[in-house]
Length: 598
View 1 (cartoon, helix red, strand yellow):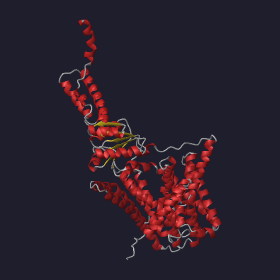
View 2 (view 1 turned 45 degrees about the vertical axis):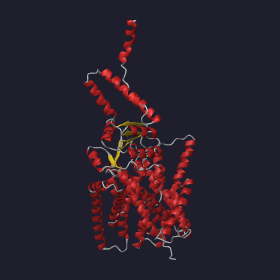
View 3 (view 1 turned 135 degrees about the vertical axis):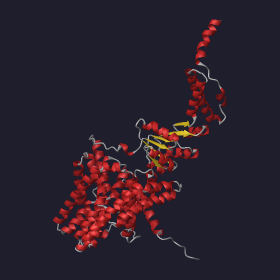
View 4 (view 1 turned 30 degrees about the horizontal axis):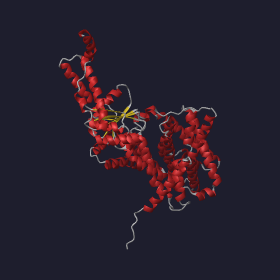
């Protein structure tokens, strides 16, 4: 009997999934959040737990793709115009945080006896927070779109950009630096500028036509492959020139934020992003070296507390300086006090350049990982204090999300019917987002100035990405009855607060929508037929008041017949079709005439 063949990485995959399935729900049940659950899962199966894996750093290198996809998805949510509005938070608050935190931490390390080159690398490395951890926490709390969430993201974005000059600083501090190295540094700067320009230009002029062509094939898997190719390709290009992969993916996402495919791309990428982010957190937990912590427990403990306290105070003070209220400043401070994943990159480069001793590198890495682990607990502490203050009658400042973050109306189907509905709503200044699955319609509508995106009405993830979970009204203006039926069922189950308005193709479809419990439906030819009939009666010489009587009676009989059909079937109430409308004026004159005759 032949031995069973086990695919590569099969056992490892089973272990990762098992650890996540057990640890994450338990962590969320006790209020620690999924991030801590993933970290504990990694610690459990890593070298210092059950020892299923011995090399966490190889897994961590692969799992960083989760951070790449996370930044790509965030970029899809930020149009260039909106990103420009955040310039003060990114370049003002973000640069201030990196510079002030780096200088203060560097000074403290130098005062306790570290050489200046070590203090510079360690200080500025610890000044960087974790984009992966902070954004995951903000998303779980639903606060990424809140004012403090946007400011925290601005700081994180600048930190991602600052990895480039910090790596250059490591090269300059290296004992190996020579005249040829300066020439190489200048060449790298030129390569970086060229790579950024290439990503921006490709995203601006090339990607939308490519996705339009792919969408016309109606092959979802090809669209998914293209989305991954864009995110990972731009990330790889940036890595080749020395920038962070996450920054490259973010830039490509921003360039696609104004395209009609942003919501579909976001829905396609999200499952991969979530799985890889979980793998990233597990790998970070596996990298925690308990023997290093045990041998240097006092240094590590003091380092973690000092790092989180110093960064927290600096971030709070800077946020207040840049206009945040006290409540927002505190929330930013407890969201970003940890070290970040880019510190691993910086410390590894410094160790390779003979700047950072191996033992110091291991201690700093342990401090960063433990600070990540304690960040959700710091957030819980702030929530506990705020709850106690509220209970004692001390009100805190309210935190609101951006009003423009979600549409008030979602229109699905943008043919002639959906376009007219949109025109009615936008004429009152009502914010809408429209979806359609035909590239030709999308291109035509965009040339007319409408905000419309590529999306399938039967995909719940696309509807959610387009804002369906927060929409006040969802208007289904699609032609396919079966597709609409499936969409109505999904929307009613998942977005119960949204009103559902539907376009019915015919009377049978209208009856079906009634049974599904939609809030409003109308046959697409009903109103136009009544207008046609009114005009015909006017041409035949009937006065306008009589025409209005007939129209009102036809509407009433149609509604009565519809109710009868719901109870008795398709042919019920057919006698309603052939009744003559009584004349109100004739009825009003009937009794006086009878009285005179008598």
